[in-house]
Length: 432
Image (cartoon, rainbow, N blue to C red):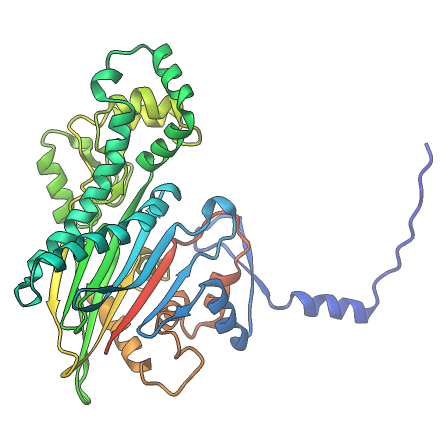
């Protein structure tokens, strides 16, 4: 055997200094987890932080709404599952504005379906209402019912697709061979239906009328809406958390589920619905809304890349009296007066709240709302143009570390394959 010898010259002192210069801005962290595992991140100069944050968050602005949606982990499986809508509709009586955040979980199929379908459903129903009821007779509860019905109808359509494809009575009678044949013969249809039934999406939306005298906010899930107001010309900003949070951290939600399923200790366990899902209300998640035979016989056996069979069986055994996830949203109506008050509305997915907790900043919902409205209100008329053009970006900068350059850099540049923070989407709407 012949070996080729390679002679390498020792690095010069200049080369050593250059190498040290190249890595001096790289640090490591264990993310507070302890243990030996460390992850690298790059300290960025302050001038680069806002530019990079703007790029990574797809920051956009319209005449009255600023938006960001942020997920720094670039691995394909962990791409951002949040979606949002900002639309204006020319309807009888003028232009209505619709904004919404859809926070998907367990995949992209359901949240994409909701994002595509819900705005048009709301618009069609609202248009029918406005054509049938004179503007002078339009009561706020009529619009609230339109919003609620659209959300529930969309969830019903997801469930109906499953039951039409495989009726419960039929499923309980056919053999495994017949079931396999039924699915294989209509596999593309099954693939779409099963994905929407095993994934889910929360919804937080706002609808305002042409005169900006009324705003409706609908919530289904664990996102947060905050309404800020300031008396003109120079009053102080006040903040109000509009909605309750639909997850198992909310005692009233946990108690509701337990009351609906008495004697079922596992209906809420490990602070999750049947030990699996944190939100207590959502679109999709149909397997938690239908009899367990669908999970035992269909989803567990005929859906790739879902749950391991033993986990699917464990959760299915807890499905005794479905549904466990609710599709009933809560709708809030507020009268506003833009002639007397400066008003803003912040919609955010739950990743924004979670990020403060991850930084050991313990804030109540009200304290968080006060912080957000104070920050946005301060910068609404700021002469500092670095981030002034996008108020949602101001909030995101505060959440990822604010003035702590090292923390912001870590959140933007961490070299880690796993997802280290939840998706964050923020909409800031100004009523003028």
